[in-house]
Image (cartoon, rainbow, N blue to C red; front, top):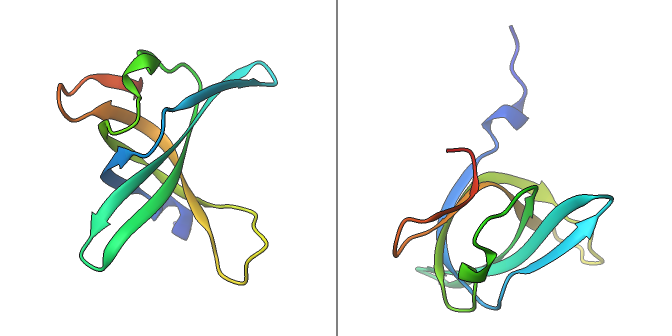
Length: 105
């Protein structure tokens, strides 16, 4: 069976929230948006993160909190000449207390 490249699209990263996470409702689904920064040996990289569905303990997602995220990359629409990606989270947890906030157990 031939496998598509998309099944290998996965990312796990640790970073700090640069602002409080924001929850919204879109077509009856809960949507949480956040942006994290990650110190990379060449500088700081910023990632937009999307979480869809039930997100517990949202009050823990405040500016400066270190979190770990697993998910996949999705291309975002932009007006730039380069590609711009976001992380669509399948699980998200705090690293300090290993509190699972979102995703499968």
